Structure formats: C-alpha cells, structure tokens
Image (cartoon, rainbow, N blue to C red; front, side, top):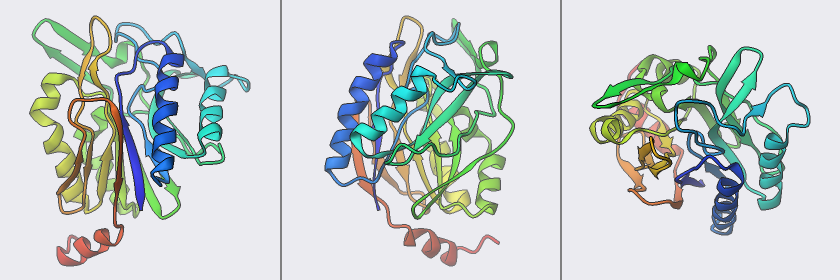
Length: 260
C-alpha cells in the first residue's frame, strides 16, 4: 500500500501553510499514494503562549477554516489523515486531528489526551495553558488500514497504544511537533518501542525547523515497521515522502513472536 507523509515548518498563517501542503498533496497523488499523513498543528502554528488566531470552530457549520481543508482535499483528490489543528469547542480549545477521504468526506477525529509540559534550560512549554485535554481514544478505518490516532506527547504513554492494539489496529499514527532536545533524546526510541510492543506499523509525521521566535522542532518524521525497522526517516528538511507498507508484515510478526 503506497502512502505518504508531509514534514513541514508550519507558521501562524494558515493560508501559507495550505499553499505548501497543496503542492505536496498533488505530488503524492501523482506518485500513486492513497493517503497522506500530516503533522501536529499543520494548519497554524502559534508560539505556545497563546492559541492560534486561525481556530477551527466546531460549532460553526460554515467555519471557513474547516471548509478550507475540505476544499483542499477535494481539489487534490487524495485523502489526508491525522494532522491536527487548534479547535474551539464548548469544552475549551482542543488539539484535534482532521482527516478526510479523497472525496472530502470527514473521517473520525481525535482530541489530544496527554498535554505536553516541559521545562528545559530557559524555555518552558505547558500546553494546558492553551488546550483542554481530550478523553476518548479513536480508531479510524481507511481502506485496509485500521488506525489508532495519537498526537505527539501521546507517544510517551504505552497504555494508549496497547488499548489500540487490543482494538485490532494495524497502524499507529502520531502527528507530532517534538522539541529539539526531547526529539534528539527520545523520538526514535519511542516510535520504535510503540511499533515493537504492539507489532504494528507506526507513522509519525512531524514538524521541523524554526517556526517563530520561541519554537523550533526536531523533524525526523518516521515510518517504523512491526519489527521495529525504520523504513523512512525524513531527516531535518521539509517535504513529501512517499513510501510503501506491506500489511501482511503485521500478521507475520505477530505470528512469529506471540504476545497474547
């Protein structure tokens, strides 16, 4: 199954981000990909002190920001999966995934459950200052894929991934914006661990580079197979990365190392 992921340096301006994404979606479709995975906050990246000014409003049936995403998918004719955007709701501001099939039909969404808090050197990030945590896991089905949705800091919590494994997923995805220090220390380790523990593919599309005066991210979007082998490492550059996965690999690994 041919898929793709986008690694990018999102900025606050959603229109600028969508312009870049449109080119990569067109490229991915031309290379035969059936869906593209996007990173955390792909739509608009704030400085971490206050929410994006381009909030999707779940209570606005004519929200221009959600319409812009649907229009993008319909224009390019390729599905998008798992990237997140700040969303206004009755509960507060949520970090929510947005996924659409190739016709523009909206697919199930997931709200980030584990909010990042980190204090390294002179900088600190506390997502709970902006976001309200979600409470419910979400499995998304797309063609042969049964996907457990996660966002960034969620990858540190093996219990969420294990719950998805028990629900029968063959792929875990973590739309991410890992900081540079934590990325260097733990990013590859965590992605490979979640793949090996749950004997499934892991696709983690990530932000990369300097986004604003406060925030820079690690990049290295990854595709890891159920044995823990890294199939794609996007390094530290923006771009669209097309790859193939063989879902038969999931059953082969599960039949070779029996984990109950």
